[in-house]
Amino acid sequence: MTSYQTQQPILQDYLAICTQFPDKPLGKKQRKERHQALMNWLHQPCDDIVSIAELYAFQKAHAALSLGKPFCTKVIVPAVLADMEKGNIDGLRFLFENSQAKPAFEIGTAEDFVEIFCAETGHRYNPYQLADMILNREPQNQAALQHKYFLLRRYFAFSIHEVPYGILNGMDFAEPSALPAMIQDLAEFAEICHKLSIDEEPFIRKTAALYHAYAAYLNAAEKYDDFADYLVRHSIPF
Image (cartoon, rainbow, N blue to C red; front, side, top):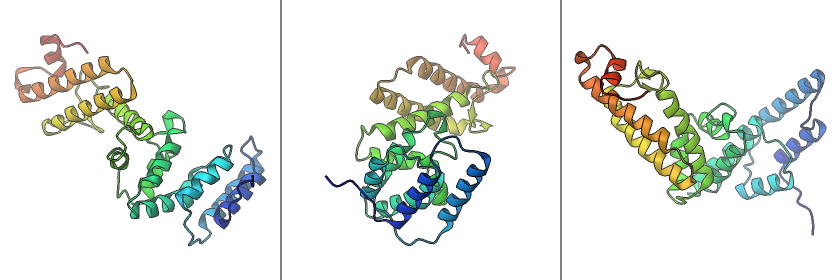
């Protein structure tokens, strides 16, 4: 059997850089040279778009190779966009599978391939929309479900971390008008957990109780000293 060898210059050049500077501890001089080589490669003009099939083959042939942010920006993003324009989800599947291969703490950060894609496309899409494009066709797709799970779990945990002072929606305290959608998102989170066989029932019950309590408190805030007073008087643990 003939071993795989890419004919794509953009992939050949990336492979050459990684071969010259392997993914192992490097000295300061080598790290600087590697970074410069990657930046030169990143900014080198290239009209060729690698197919998703070629990306899968390249990754399989070089499983130990690190596909970092420059590779995602220059190769993966254009490939996924081209695939989406054809009405396919193969590119999105590749994107989410590679995102899930990273440590969980990187999901939703600047190192996350899904976040890189969103940023490079001018935030035309958000991660939830991209995941749903997959899930609309493949409701049990593990990579998309897990990505949404991590993002939503982090969002909900952050939303209640200021209790008993209030419930957050993003960086600000939630307005009454935002709470119904947040409660609906929590129900979706429960469905995702069920599909992934992850037991988050105690967390979901606690968060739902706090959301409903905060909505009730905001509608009658003049009767209470603050949200903590409402929780205590209604025997709602926090």
